[in-house]
Image (cartoon, rainbow over all chains, first blue to last red; front, side, top):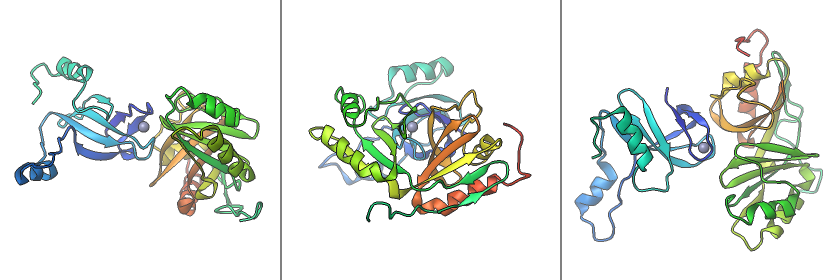
Length: 106
Length: 190
Ligand SMILES: [Zn+2]
C-alpha cells in the first residue's frame, strides 16, 4: 500500500484516496511540432525500474494535483511536491541522492 | 422552494449497534472558493460571517454555525438551513470585488451523525484514516473516502462524529455506515 503526503492539505493519504496521473514533467509540444513529437507526448511513457516521478490527484481529499518521487521497485517514497513546477525541486533531488547515491537524473 | 419546505435525503433514517447512525435532517452548507493566502481573504470572511479563517484541516464552531478548511482555496460554512442563502449573499457582498465563488450547497449534500462508544470503530472500517483519539480529535476536518465515495468527517465529541457526502449517494453512504455499525461487528481497535 502506497501512502503519499499531499503537499496541499498535509494529509498522509492512502493510495485509495488518490488518483494516479502517470509520468510527471511531460512537455507538451507547441504549434509546429512534428507528428512524431506529439505522438510521443500523447503515448510514449518512461517505465523505469527504480526512481520515478509521477502525478497524483488527491481526489477523495482536497482535490489538488501534486507530484511524487518514488521507487517503482520498493515503493519507497522520496517525497511529494507542488504541481506548480516543471521539474523536481532541489530538496527532492537531494532526498533521492541521499538514499540512492548511484542514481542520476535522466 | 419556499422556506421550510425542504426535505432532507433520508428523513428520520436511523440504525443502531456499535454506534447509532442517523440523518439529523436539513443542514445549511455554503461552499466558498477563494485564495486563502490572499491578504483580503480573512478580512472578507470575517466581515461577512464573523468567522476567522480556520487553519489547515481545522473546523471551528460559533453558536449554531461552523466553518471548516477544506482545501487551500476552499472553506465550507455550516449554518441553519434557512440561513444559507443569506450567508451566500453576505459573502458575495463582502467579496464582490474579489475573485471568489460562494454557493449554497445545502441540498446537494447529506449529513450523517454517528454517535456512541463504537463511533471510531465504524469510521475506521469505512475510511483510510487514523481515527485514534491522539490523531483525530474534535476540531479537525478530514476529507477522505467513505467506502466508495468521497466524504468529509469530523468529531463533535469523544464518541460522536459527523459525516458529509453528496446527496446523490446518501442511501449508499447510510447503508454502508449502518452495516459497519451492526452489533457484533466490533473489531476492538478503538
Ligand atoms: Zn490534499
